[in-house]
Image (cartoon, rainbow, N blue to C red; front, side):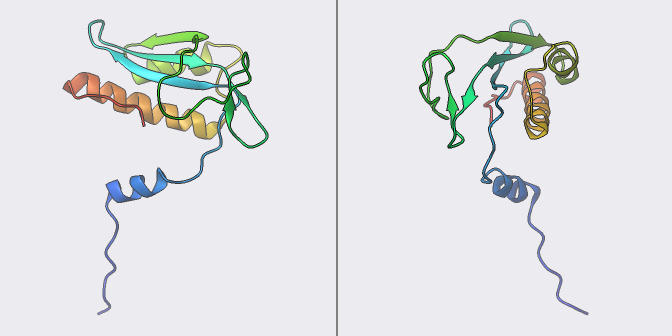
Length: 129
């Protein structure tokens, strides 16, 4: 018999994938949070422009938008739903034009919405990845 290779854990796989280089969506970005009092999932959409170096830029000021920290910007739209599916339908099917232009961004949002709903149901903290 051969020696079996140790398979990485699901957490290790996701941790490694989280370190890959991302291409930002020129359609904008979302800040996801929970409204526990209303038992809803909220997603604020912000517009951006992607510069020639791949950084997100505020279309009004021309300043780069930092990936971490607090930025004072006005959201263009607030989406609210009681389930991840409801929020996805509102964003991807009922908004024209759709604010998401990249499939990888759409997949990311679906994963994050499911994580957020799980935290809402269990009472755990939710921090957007």
